[in-house]
Length: 234
Image (cartoon, rainbow, N blue to C red; front, side):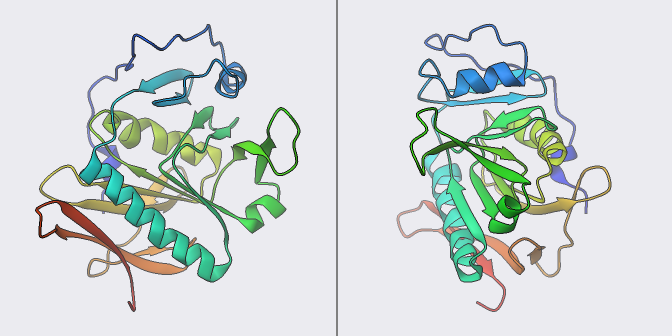
């Protein structure tokens, strides 16, 4: 199956807001220092991808992004808990990687205990040094989910998959609920890039979660979209 993040895309643009002041940033290290400073904006999503700062101040769409993120995060959290796999973070969790030349805040992140034990991922402590206080993840998480929005389409489909692969991310999920067709694809690592998992009667396997999943949606009685991430045997 062709991964839909490889579809042709026009040239990208940088989304700016008049209230955001960007200092001179020469590299990933400088961006990370800024991102952890008091001067960093407290709203919007600001990512550093392959030497480029990308700012998205657009509000999150309620029923094609917000509720979908909640459902995917909820079902993944259930499985992570069942397996005692590790940690799950939903939104505003900064992931940085030197090999990926990346610092971003994915929609959903899963980090296995084994990734921390092996040193593939480390938690960066808060500058104050207070115990059990961490502000950033360095390395390649086991699973990352991105939900496509109008303002993030080019980034989610083209640049982030490349950066996440270089960072060592084991599994990358993409969901797009904006159109008439709900699109959902689990990607695993191939020799040089992420490749889509096989689709078997609507089911896709997650190696990280050791389960097969299918994403469905329907209209609520009041007309809004509702979502269900099903796990096989449910």
